[in-house]
Length: 328
Image (tube, rainbow, N blue to C red; front, side, top):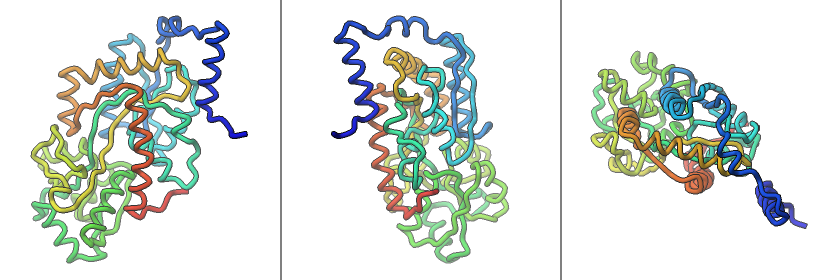
């Protein structure tokens, strides 16, 4: 007999309970949640661009709930430590992963033996924003356009190098090289901030970094942004051209989300989604996200989960296109 998936089993159990008259205490759950502190788990390092977003959301949701929101930075494994921690947590709404939903889907292709099946163990219940990584150079360099950089890197051959700090940056970097013939060596850093000294000193020629750091450094006159790894320009950074419009087709975007362990009760899922929708809908948050070079992105729990499942397929293609070797 074919084995039942975990979710099929749970759905069947719920149906049987309703049929027998033993319905779940959904109203009671909705009325009592939250009754204790909530933990926001993230794979970003404290003080990083992503951490800024997590702590902003934590503060705004603290104001809405009246509960302490603990930010738990579980750095390591490219975010996998944080993802696995939440997947194995109790599905009670008190442990929420604030992380890239696109990367959660990518985990299934980026690891040879993923410790969990994210499609079965996690539910994305809300989205926050969309963003794309950017190709940047030291503002002191003569490179004004992506074409300038490409010509210089082709001339430099295998002596060229660039900085990354996560898999999305790696994918954009590899697509850029595949489309142009550039042979630059990728140097991976623990965080984007860790690469700054090497960029400024000329130890690495360019970098692919998140928009939070890239735009902040550009405003200070330290970095120059040459292209965005998305198909279309972002409303938050309308003056920055995409890689695609500069003749290097790609559409690698990421989106941040709130994710909980699978099996979390429906009323709790709806409540968490409402918090994030309410926060992201404010003019204050829209301006905050725009300043970081990201566009607000709101969805229902059903839409958010469907998007994560779509990303599982997208990342299979990215890994093949960038010729990445899964880790592990």
